Amino acid sequence: MSFYSNSARFNEARRVAVFGGTHGNEMSGVTLVNLWMKNSAEIQRKGVETKPFITNPKAVDTCTRYVDMDLNRAFTPENLSAPGGDDLPYEVQRAQEINRMFGPKGSPEAYDVIFDLHNTTSNMGCTLILESSKDHFNLQMMTYIKKAIAPDTCLVLLNEHPLLKYSTTRSVAKHPVGLEVGPQPQGVLRSNIFEAMRVIIKHALDFIQLFNEGMEFPPCTVEVFQVSERIDYPRDANGNIIAMVHPSLQDCDWEPLNPGDPMFQTFDGKTIHYQGSSTIYPTFINEAAYYEKQQAFVITRRETLVASAIRKA
Image (cartoon, rainbow, N blue to C red; front, side, top):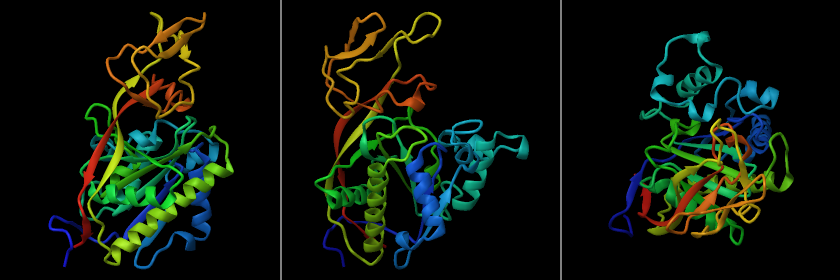
């Protein structure tokens, strides 16, 4: 019997995967998953099968982000259904293989939860990435993690904007969870970032075990930072960057940027100010991997979501 009249009911999460190497130069996830592939005892929980998996082995072998295209943008319906076999870009081939192993995407047979481990060069700390504001299972999990690691912090980034959301590797699962931890340079392994990621996965798996064992989680509120816009660097008529992230904005992920605050600094020292009408919260500031995507940072807005009580069906 439920203590809460409007509890959302979910099936037990019996099949869980932990992905590393979606980007082959993000070393915390690569190293943890390789460690767990040799000995997975640390990530196993009673009644749960947890599978560690390297998603982009060719990129891992060369310590590059990807081979032909970004795997974390490759899980579109068109790519997953494309014929062509070996003629397809490598990451499309991998997307199809991953979809066969852990999906099919959107089907009842798909894995229950996939954790996709990433590093960022931005000063974001620990960030959980939520793909749907209506995924009450993930909202409850993220609340559990945030409480478990306190006084350390772990923020929640919500990306469900119809024009900005992309087809992620983890989107194969019923409950996809992204984990970004930084700052860490590409191709580098920092012990503090490694341990922070490891601890968050521990608590996430603990939550799944507790849920499966019948624990009911009460209604709660979750502060999220919702993606609303991507901002490019200022450019000249030929598309060349003509300004950098301003020193007062650099490394200030999640901090408020108010109208009139410095945003960029041109190469000759002039300041370009934020001209918006309301306070925003930038993140992924000056991310190295996003220069090719013409993105200086992401604009987010703070919101509070209400998560229903949940229990197993």
